[in-house]
Length: 418
Image (cartoon, rainbow, N blue to C red):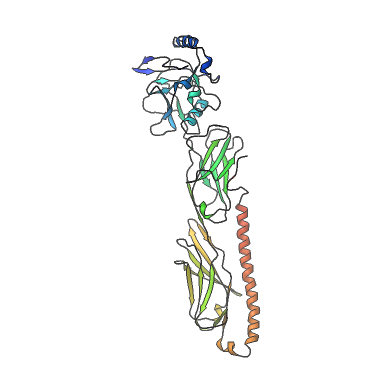
C-alpha cells in the first residue's frame, strides 16, 4: 500500500502533517486490504479511529537540523520531495536511537531547551520504533493533529573520552601503552575500540560488562609503526545495524622510538696492545648509534673501583668522539656508552654498550722484564672491574624488564570479540 499525503491541515499558514506511530511492530502493507485501508484513513482523518500503515512505502529520508550539528537537533523527514518535521508526541529513546543509527550517529539522548530555526510542516506524531529497526521507514503511524510547537528533538552527539594512563606520551619499542576509554550515557552493552588514525580496523577491541562505562585498552610490545594519533569508539554490541558514521573520542598523539644499544671503540696516538694507553699520551673514545632523534645526547660513563665518572656530548651525528689529551691513572677503568633523548615529559635511554676496558701504562714499565708480572696483576684487577660493570648492567636491565612487566597487561594488540 502506498500512502500519499494522508491528512492536510492548515495552521499558521503552514502545512502540518500529523500521525501516530505504534509500538506493536511493523505491519506488512500487503496484509491490509486496500478498500479497508482507504476507509480507515478517512475515519482517522476525521478523528474516529487509528489506522496502522507501513511507513516504508513513503520512501522517507531522515535528517537532523541542529544549526550546524548533524547529530543534534530537530528531526525531519523527506516526504515527496518536501522536508517535514517529526512531532514529539510519544517520541522516546527508542525512536531517538533509531534516528541516530539512520543518520550515522550513535549515542542517543532526549535533549531539552533546544532553540533552532522555525520548522516547516510537522508530521509523524507519537513515533514509536521497536527492536533494532534500521530507520524511521520501518516504524508505524496513524493520523493525529500536531502543531509546529511540538517538534521531536534528539541528541546523538555524545562522544567517548580517551585518556592515557601514564604521565607521558613517548614510549620505547617493546613497551606497553595503557589507554582508558570512557563512554557517555547510552546503551548498556558496549564494545570499546581503540583506533589509530589512518587504520580502518581497530587495534584493540574490548567487550564491556553490562553497564560498564569505562574500559582499559592496552597496546602491548609496541613497535615504531605504532607511533601516531589514537582515539576510541564505542558501539552497541546488540545492534545488527552498524553506524554509518563513527564518532571518535578526543585524539592523543603517541611517539614510539627505537633506541638501539650504542657501539663503542677507542683510538690512541701510538701503537699499543689492545686495551692499553700509554701514560701522558692522548686517546679518544667513540660512541655510535642509529637512529638519532632531535635533542639526543651520548653519555660516556667510566666505572672505576673508587667511583664513577660521567661525560656527556650532544648527538649531532650518529657517532660522537670523547677526547682525552693526557692519559693518567685516573683514566683507567671500564667505559660504557649510552644514548638518551628527552621527549616531552620523559627522558628515554638506551641500554648501555658493552664495557670497554682501558689500562693506562707507563712506557718504561711496558718495556721492562717485570712487565709480565704487572700484566698478570692488571689482568686480575681488570677482571674484577669487568665483573662489577657487568653486574651493574645486569641489575639495570632486570629493573627495566621488571618495571615493564608490571605495566604490561596480558592483552594482545588485536583482541577478537568472544
